[in-house]
Length: 455
Ligand code: TYD
Ligand code: MG
Image 1 (cartoon, rainbow, N blue to C red):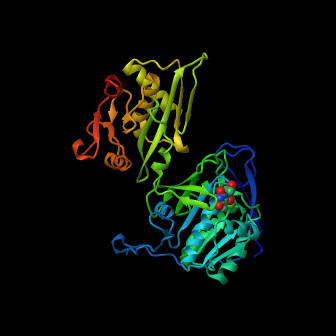
Image 2: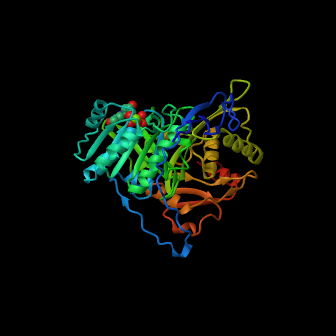
Image 3: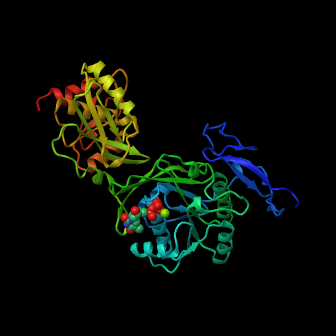
């Protein structure tokens, strides 16, 4: 009692805290990003959490986590096999990508299983939610909606309702009375999330937190939460495509980089059980420059088509445009082709595109990209039934990649019959696979095998 409220200044970019205002954040260098936040001294009722005793690691008993299946298989899989009780899951993404839709669908699924689900929103009115719900054909008796922005109010209602699972949409609209700054500032976001976290852990209620991420990647909001929450899922995709990819970038209860693929339909998000087929279904027949690469997204193999277009440049400076792939990697591969094969692509315009709006991050896609570049440059199509993968080194050597068997199996499942891989990367002999397998040790060998034989 009697203590003066204390002001601190928090950088909205990185969360740096300073006792006085500064024009520029000394940590991240952003200008004018420090916002005053008044910390009200707590009124002396800090819960008496008794400090735990240190325990010998051998004596800690593992309680198997309780998981709740949502019935949306793609979503359960990303989480590592269902929602863990008491876990805090952050779902981030650009506005309009489908976060509210997904969460409402998930809550409805659980409500249908007679779990009491609560959807707290500070973004939309009850009318708007109801309209969305009817569009999604959601009508469970156990799904409750609360419009509120003050977290203390929410907790009062939560105590009355005692939900089994809840969602907060969005974290940027919520505030706590403890801080005087406006909702959406780093201080508020952190504090509200910490309160939700504490509540979730003590009551064993799983909570979904929705966080907006802006186009420029200014993820001040959700980014500062990543270390706090148990699981971070980001929605990827753009409004030009109907696919939405939900990717786990952190998961205390499962493997990361798992992806789930959804389609945005007029009745909400539908899961795509076989994404490779979806991404390949519009593949052009007999076109040069098109190659299918078996990638690995988390634990899931995924076949993606990469397309290259190489042509003489009509400008002084040739253009390099890459969509879904790092242009520096493409430049590097072009340089390797120049040096090792004597193919000068330096004066050519080069365009590379990964279809379906996905990104190729793995070095395992190098060999496929090289093949696409060569195929377009030579105007010789690569066999439609062939997949290609392997990492390419600076000397033009082809290196092994992780889990080749898994990739080959996925390709075989989708009807591909030929595969080019790096030498010595397979544990089993090539004849053990349901495929014609060709092993190459260098880009020269790839070139000879793909384009030097009779076509
Ligand atoms: P929404 O879940 O509101 O996005 P977020 O919460 O991430 O901002 O989804 C918004 C978009 O999804 C909107 O442009 C309309 C589209 N949509 C559909 O195509 N079908 C549907 O059934 C619903 C509910 C939304
Ligand atoms: Mg929304």
